[in-house]
Image 1 (cartoon, rainbow, N blue to C red):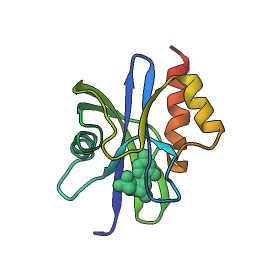
Image 2: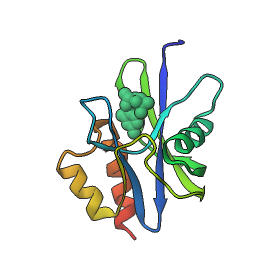
Image 3: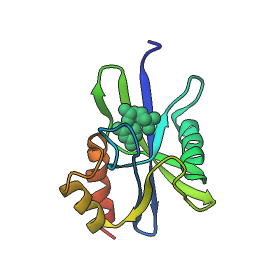
Length: 135
Ligand code: DCM
């Protein structure tokens, strides 16, 4: 179906910390934190889309690794997946987001508990918590 939307988000981990981005839009999500990413365009693989999106949103080049287990289907026609990504060049900056933040397990836990995560991203946030905690 042509109206199926696939969104790919990046789990950027570096030195035991996870990169989160604070949304600026739409109003109902503004201020909440997410794994940065966006829609897979026709003809792109999810990995290609993630490289493009993180270049546009964070101004860095990344290499894409494996997918996280969680697949989120918040409504018919919308599927979200997350893939691991490693920065290969550049320094992240918030091009499209309100702010960026590197969190450890405690920082992520606090954002989850205070309802500060984009709801769709909670599946991955909980999955990533485990990895941040074992370090
Ligand atoms: N989205 C999400 N979590 C993310 C990235 C995106 O829930 N980490 C959702 C928000 C929008 C859609 O995917 O409904 C498209 O994202 P964007 O507006 O960033 O292109």
